[in-house]
Image (tube, rainbow, N blue to C red):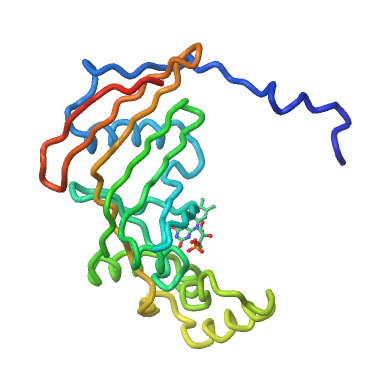
Length: 221
Ligand SMILES: Cc1cc2nc3c(=O)[nH]c(=O)nc-3n(C[C@H](O)[C@H](O)[C@H](O)COP(=O)(O)O)c2cc1C
């Protein structure tokens, strides 16, 4: 049943951000260390899928596209996600191996924007993560020709039946060759904390390349 209360005009939607602040004096001089702190808080906050992030990629003609993926690994090298390498994003990353990632943690009035180059995660690391996935997700990776036009839902259901018959047992599903991980190696990491009167805190780390020293600067909101 639809609610008959009139919806206020879109332009009046407004939240004042008052929950926290972000000061140079309080953060480590390494964006990975600071990200870990914020990510732990996001996880502990009870929000759904704090590891969901919007990944933006470009093609060789300069076209931009974005979609959500899940952060599935983080170490001193960068931010890992897994997908079908024949997908639209996979094609774009092959043409232009650089990307942006945005985490929006609205409940905490925070976002993190990360930019950098993208490299393939090793076959061994992709195998190890694939082996951890539930059986249904492993089968799904075989079923989906991600980003291709398909005739209809029935086509998917039919392929699902075929692959369930081929791999009925959990634990023995091989990784599809086109499925694997990517790692975004950051050169820019911006931490954004909402503040009152739209005078937000923005602290940005930049470096010239992997292994180089990080610079920390404050940006105007
Ligand atoms: C919260 C959320 C998490 C997602 N995580 C992934 C993921 O980790 N890997 C993936 O391939 N697609 C994921 N998807 C689906 C993608 O957003 C997208 O539809 C798919 O990867 C195809 O994108 P492309 O055509 O741009 O390549 C997720 C979607 C949502 C809403």
